Image (cartoon, rainbow, N blue to C red; front, side, top):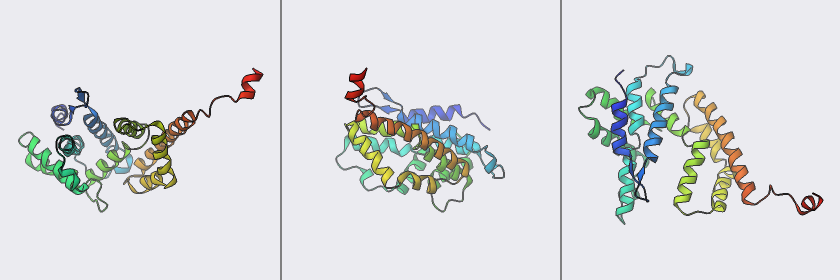
Length: 229
């Protein structure tokens, strides 16, 4: 398998943008690297041992699966009417595949690049048949769940200027609607991924519950206890 490092650097050039503070924003690039690492690990699990998997194409697709997000974020910042307003999830995948093709053409065999683009296009497709796209979908979904999911939520809420109360209420609404149970049930192709998601979700819930407790100061001793001490 060819070395992946040059493609990681290529992804870095595409995905590292400027933060609102004028610094390098590694958020998308870090996400892409995590998804690549998880996808690579999933591709070796016992559950897929009989699948025919092009692991190099899978890794490259993971690096570029959200390449379109950079352009869309730029349009949000610079235009009052931006393409994201009318782009569906399918449009975003297609745009990402096109950007990957433009960036990587001539840097890998044409047939393998075609596969990379197809993996990106087919990710999160309910009727998915492509093995690599199934694995990429699971790896991407896992990054939304658990401690990493909490971190992503907090980053977004902070940038939006939300208070802790708003954050806790948003999480509680998801719990009330059974959002996470539905995600774990429907978003994964592999039982291995589903088990990992359940473990990560349990860890995330513990943090969210503690945040809610501290927000209301429910962990403080009552007045009688303070007087007795």
